[in-house]
Length: 276
Image 1: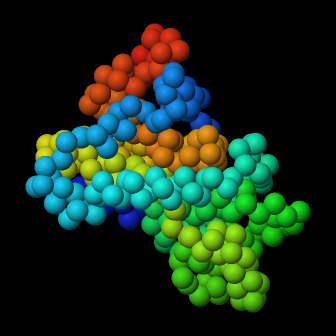
Image 2: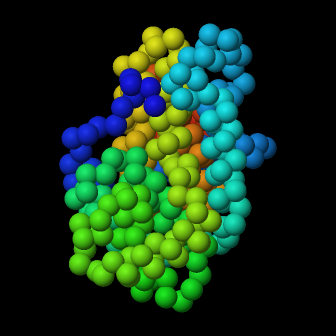
Image 3: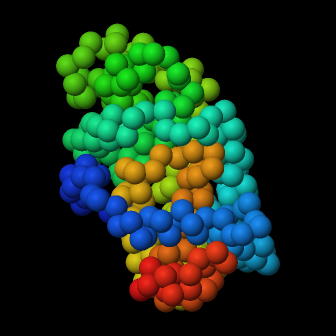
């Protein structure tokens, strides 16, 4: 990730623990802005980044910043594979149960000082795990699942998490790895947003660093709200959620006109009000 878009180390507990009420107009705009009419792809603005003509010097710069074209392709492939085994028939966990699980993981993440990127990854893995594991005891085992998931990402001693015996977490961690096919690094909303913004800084020759940094922070803040209310699914995977949030951020920063990401079936007046 380019240095101009960095994670905030001084996060407070409320940054990841609280679950604020969603601003309905913006969340609805994210959902409506994902797919243009007659197009099953993502928002036009981020997708065109794949089609930009890149010379050798720019390609080298992208490689040095670890955000080359190949990374986007790899992330897209991994996301498609992880989502392909998920049934898109609604959330597996009841909303209140999922909210409680996220709050528990957020508390662990805060106590262990995990970076926010790990919090987004943990939430994405929890949703993926619950869609693949359909056992009747999924909910009853949720506390151990969340603890093992955070421990797995942290690679920390289980005594720092909670007083549960280590054998309990060891068994749960083994089950997590089997269910996730041993793939614990998957694209999240945060990883897509960070990759997009790092590439945008290079594609604009770093002329818009302050504006793009603001867009990144705004999008991450909105993603933290969105993740509490909208679990990832095949119809709304992390990439499409990130595309919508990035588009709204660029419009809010006046780097794009509202028309650039508007859908044909949305009232222009309503869309302008949403983007104000």
